[in-house]
Image (cartoon, rainbow, N blue to C red; front, side, top):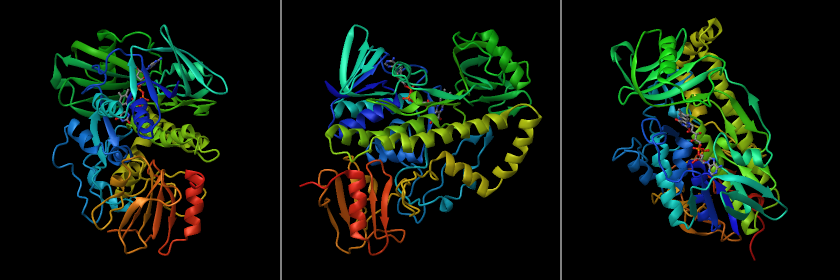
Length: 506
Ligand SMILES: Cc1cc2nc3c(=O)[nH]c(=O)nc-3n(C[C@H](O)[C@H](O)[C@H](O)COP(=O)(O)OP(=O)(O)OC[C@H]3O[C@@H](n4cnc5c(N)ncnc54)[C@H](O)[C@@H]3O)c2cc1C
C-alpha cells in the first residue's frame, strides 16, 4: 500500500508528488493519458504565465534554473539579486482585457519583497512545467503510471481504494489532482458550488485567409473580446452567449468563424482550423478540500475562467501548501489539526480567485454596464497605484493567510532573505524542511534546529537586509509562521515551532 495516490499527472499533481517524494513518502501517480505532452499542453496553446509565488516555489526546491532554461529564459532572467529592491516585472498581462504596463508596477510598494533570483513572472508551457516536474519526481522515487483512468474511489477509516481499468490500488491517502472535470471530486462526494457562465471562450490554431483584417493583440470590442497572437495562428475569443455553446461537441470551423466575425466586428475568414477548444467562466469551488482520506488540489478543487492566468498558479499554491502537511501526517509527527489547515488556508485563496475572475468577466461584458466599468478601470489602470494593486493581487504578493498572529509578515510568502555570505532562504529550503533564520547573532551557523532536527533547519548570521527583524520561522511552503524583533523571544519561537512542526524530538 502506498502512502499517497495522486490522481492526475498535470502540473499540480506532479508538484505535489515531488513535495511528498522529497519528504520520503511512497507516492503513486495515476494518469489517464497514455503519453505525456499534447498540442494542448505545448506552446502556443499550452502557454502559461507563472507568477512570483509559483516561480519561487521552483526556486526553493532547486528547480528554477531548469525551469528557466526549459522555458527559453536563458542568461539574463531580468533579476538582479544584489540590487536594493526587486527587479520590475517584464510583463504583467492584462486585467479584463486591458493590458497592464509593467513600468507602472511599483515594486518597492509590494509588501515584504526582497531581490532574489526568481523573476516576478515567467512565461512557460504546461508541457515544460510537466517535463521539469516529472523528471524530478522520477528522481525522488515517485511512480507515475500512465493510461490509468481512475473510475472508482472508496474509503474507510484507514485507507482509500481506487480502481483504474482492471487494476485496484490502495493507499493511506488519495489526492484528486484530476482537473476541472475531476472524477475523484464526484466519486468522493465533494460538493462543488458556484456560479454559471456568462460567456463561452474559444482558443484555436487557425490560418486566416485575410490576416490584415484582424489586428494582433488583445481587443475589447462592442460585441466581445478577441486575442490574436502575433505569430503561430493562435487566436482566442470570448462570446457573451450566457455559456450557451454545447461544449460536449467540438467547435466547427463555421461556428468559430461566425463567432470570430461577431466579436471582432470584421468579415475575416478562417481558411483552416488545426485545433480548437472551448472554455467558460463557470466559477465553482469545492466547499471543503478534504473528505476523510481524500483531498483535492488544483482545478479539481476550483474552476473559473482563465482570464488573468490564475488557475495554474493557484493550483501550485495548493500543492505547496498541502505537500508538507500531508507528509507530516503520513509520518505521524503532524501537530493536531495540521491537515485541516489546508482547507482553512487555501479555500479562501480559491474563493478570492473566483471573485477576481468574476469581476473581470463582469467588466468585459459588451453592454453599457460593462463599458461603464471598463472606462473606470482604464482610468485606474493608467495610475501607478492601480497597476500595482492589480499586480500585487495576481502575483500573489499581497496574499496572506490568517494565522492568528498580528505581525504583518506572519502568514505571508517569505521574502528571499540573503545572508551576508550570499546564501538565500531559497537555497536553504531545497530539502523541503522549515527554516529558522536567526539574524540576531553575529556568528554564522548552519545546522539542524535543536529540538526539531529532522524537520527544521537553523541558519544564523547577519542578513544583507533583515527588514528590521531578529528572527523568522519559515514553514516548508515558504510561509512565515513567526517573526521576532531584534532581540527575539525564544519562548515565542518555541511555541510557534511546536504549533507547526509538532512536539520537539527526544
Ligand atoms: C486557455 C487557457 C489559458 C490559461 N492560462 C493560464 C495562465 O496563464 N496561468 C495560469 O495560472 N493558469 C492558466 N490556465 C489554467 C491552467 O491551465 C490550469 O489551472 C492548470 O492546468 C490546472 O492544473 P491541474 O494539474 O490542476 O489540472 P490539469 O492541468 O487539468 O491536469 C489534470 C490531469 O489529470 C488527468 N486526469 C483527468 N481525469 C483523470 C482520471 N479520471 N484518472 C487519471 N487521470 C486523470 C488529466 O489527463 C490531466 O493530466 C489557463 C487555462 C486555459 C484553458
